[in-house]
Image: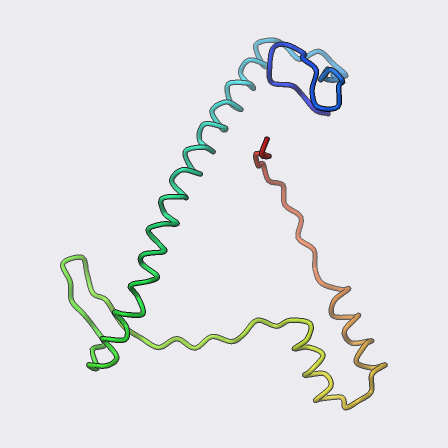
Length: 143
């Protein structure tokens, strides 16, 4: 069921009126309380979007500075740096590349040889039997 938050039922895109189909009448006090909650949620959503934009810019600068700092620390064999805000530690991190479909096919071919039928069966089994997680979220659609 779609519900229009405005108090008036004006024509919407497509030329039809946005008249909600409500199986039972919602008490006006509960409806008003619900509308206030939605307005508050929308206001908070806008604040979060604004702050996320600021955070994105700050993280971009931080990301640009990190290689320069770590390069200097590695070059001069500095593993720990004491600052007023705490200790900075320069360490090496090894990460493995993500597993993708091409990688799986390549490794199955290396392990099973050129038996394409068995490789396809394994790929179908892996890709079709992945666990599905269902969650419910609330998001605002762009106008």
